[in-house]
Length: 390
Image (cartoon, rainbow, N blue to C red; front, side, top):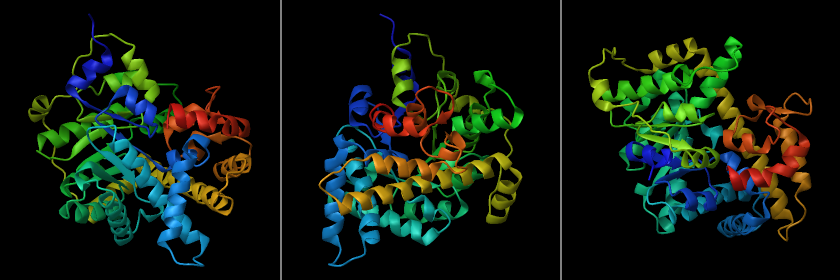
């Protein structure tokens, strides 16, 4: 009997579920799972996950003193919510879960370290071990320096929002555990920049970028794992077969599971050893100079940080609303407020660039697949987006 393409992929690559939806994780049984701020924002509106939200708020209230400002309770609750989802995921997967540091701390090394310590402390207090948790940090120079400190303490890090080779090499030299280059977002930028509808899979700029990073790491013996992320189509995934890890949304996992096409290995560490790849030495001046020259990486990093920050602002608003009326009222107002947070130009539509958060959530909410989310789609589809894509 022919094996599915997904099973073939698992033979050569660790498959990670790009979701926090427990049902999807149980179905596809990935080794690892990763979550993000957009996921938590979606969860805060869903009745099915209301108990987890309420538990996080109640915990945050107990941790603070009487009369503590609501804003501080809400911020503490967001950390707790992240950990609660992570703990539930760890009961399903055999491997690790990634939990993200507040994106608004992306340019503050010490604040990032402090937040990572707070998250790990909660995981360990709940009986989990730090070996099973990856702290997700944006790949800024400051974020990479924070990760370097944390790794020396045995706190493993997943460097996200990574778009350029300079970011990747800096992460490897800092001995971070994992990097997550964003394949689909790189493709989005080049399609827009070059006014193209698409690229053949083997010429996809995101695929080319991850291949370059993977081969560089294997050539020079870097232990940092490469995990391709943010996929737009099956071709991007199959062209990266053999990558250390790939984090894939449930809809694409389902598509791979339904395929029985033979899957050849495209990335091979032994083949990379024989390639002529110039070595890059990264210090802060070199990093910043390369970042300034790489317009795609600079713009997408800024856009990604802004997108995840917006998701957190929206989540804070929703949790404050929930805290004020913990009995559970209609969430329509929260959905409308969330829409306003993302609709930056006020034209009544949210584009992928305005969204900036989790790609899988955007794709699920955009039910007519026209590349724009309307207020009606936001209100009607956010719960479904979380359940199906997260």
